[in-house]
Amino acid sequence: MKLLSRFSFLCVLCVSVVNAFSLDREAFTLSHYDLNVRVEPGQQRFGVRGKIVLRNDSPTPEKIAVLQISSSLEWRSISTGGKMLQFVAQPYTSDIDHTGTLSEAIVTLPAPVAPKETVELEIAYEGVIVLDATRLTRINAPESAAQATDWDQISTKFTAVRGAGYVTWYPIATEAASLAEGNSLAERLGRWKEREFGSTMHLQIAVSAGEGDAPELLVNATSCPSSNEAQHQFVADCTYRSVGSVVPTFLIANYEVLDRAAIAVHFLRGHDASATNYIDAAGKSVPLINDWFGAPRTKAQTADLPNEASPPFESGPLLMTPLAGIDPKVAGLAAAHQLTHAAFSSLRPWINEGLAHFAQALYLEHQSGRQAALDYLAVHRSALNGKNKTKEKLVTPPTPDDATSNSLINTYDEELYRSKAMFVWWMLRDMLGDQALKKALASYHAEDDKEPSYMPRLIQAQTQKDLEWFFDDWVYRDHGLPDFKVASAFTRKLLPEGFMVTVTVENLGAAGAEVPVTVKYAGGEVTKRLVVRSKSTGVIRIEVTKQPEEIVVNDGSVPESDTTNNAFKIEASDAAK
Image 1: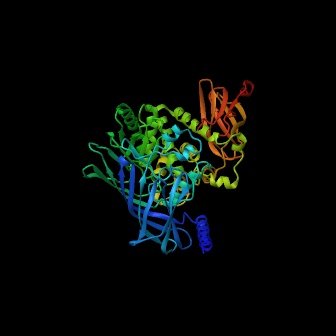
Image 2 (image 1 turned 30 degrees about the horizontal axis):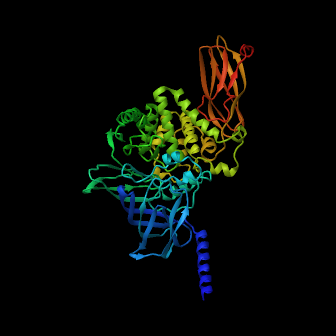
Image 3 (image 1 turned 60 degrees about the vertical axis):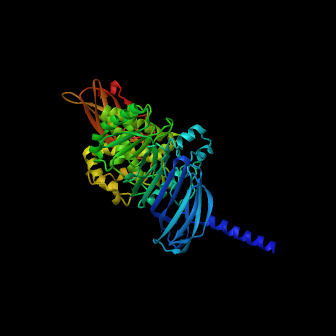
């Protein structure tokens, strides 16, 4: 009998293991959250009661749902219609949470949910949220650097908790992600954000405060009025229109505030001068950002971080960054990026982040001239080049699969959707002009962006130029980078004076671009633009008033795999012809 019992237990265990491996963790999308959250900084505790709506986005009826929260939290109950549901809780290794592990509930629903149908669940879970950098230290990151990076925690001195991708304090459902596996975490998060773009969240968060404490609660929600409901407790009622486009985040700290029309800076005691520097730099950005991207849709918020080694974090209009000793130039760049997000939003990273970085280049140009912007672009060009070890890898086009997965419309690689996308916007500006690009941006509506060609069509509508080749090389596919060189130059003396220079530019790369070609002479230079498609040549004639001395293709506004062959010296004997 004991043998039979053990055999039966083994069979059940095997079936459970098989089911775990065959789970479709992404069958359901959490389309709505209605959560009551209680935060107790004194005990570092965190508790949630509420409701969630699950929508079956798989092609088949589903009776098993998967819900995941941080491993430092514990599931208490899951029910529907007042009836408790059976679920199995298990640890699930995933770096989508700072602990490196999720607490996963495998829930048996009362009946199969048909495709596109929904089911509402009542949930309860609680636990602690403490400083934990396990996911970073297990890939050998130094502990001090890991804790400065994964700074999320609840504590009496400072509370800051970011959402999915940092701390899974609200339920999600994804496959595992690993920081040790290239872009695994970015890809999983990106895919989850796509599914959750239309998901909404209503969040009522109550915070208990100690005797004499008067902390401030910051939440990066669309709207979030707060009030003191009882002694030693304050409550905020918050709404998120799109969980997929903003990482739900809350902070609790004894902040002081500098408030302006477009931005508010929340700073820690003793950081008054740094906060003033930041808000003054932001003020210089406001007219430029408004001119390009329109008036802000929400006020930008900047929150001070206590650890000066912590990297900044931005989600929606909220920027969390150490303010102590911040350089005014860095503050201006950060503010330009932040104010752009407050004015313009898109689910697509190449648009959302690319434009925010583009705005930083615009800010530098506005403050110090075009060369300052080109120098900033050069830093990002170096990052792009650093992704490839050799020139050959950059010149040779990627495989068809890589060209698709690494395209700007599909990639979750930050160097691509930030740095490369910034170059794309800068090149479009050079090709179209400021006014045409501003009109295209003004006509963009995130809710109408349902397919990849939406933004390119808006841009194309503002010009008579054929830009299909450009979007194919730079947005729809990843064809690598161009590589320009002056193949030849012919100089002819004009009557009564001047010279005509005929320049042939060769593009050795697999991506085409419209590139500036400059003829330099004693005391001046003349620049014209030339389209040179991939693996081809282009010819342009440039008239100058004096004997030409040098030709330079590309001023740094187009990212290249090799810039050492951009200059061409004109010999005196050739110039005299």
